[in-house]
Length: 79
Image 1 (cartoon, rainbow, N blue to C red):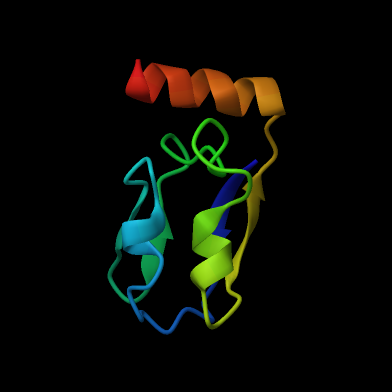
Image 2 (spheres, rainbow, N blue to C red):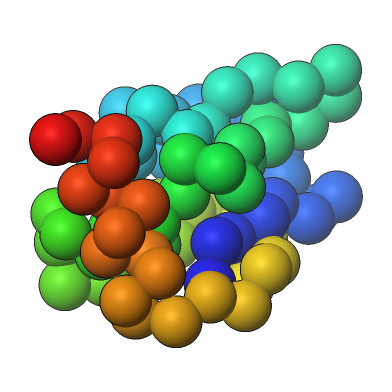
């Protein structure tokens, strides 16, 4: 399941540096997550690091993907 950031984002920047896949970037108004790069930290961490540090609790499930799909995406990104 790749994640997405809701409109409740305060653009605090806390999530950006925690992403092992550099999937989070500044959008026009709020931060956005690139679904093609988001693996919910599968392959790198035990849980999504961006969700752990988000003070606004605005990072939610976006696209449903299996653990195997997320692992394959991580492997493709990091070799």
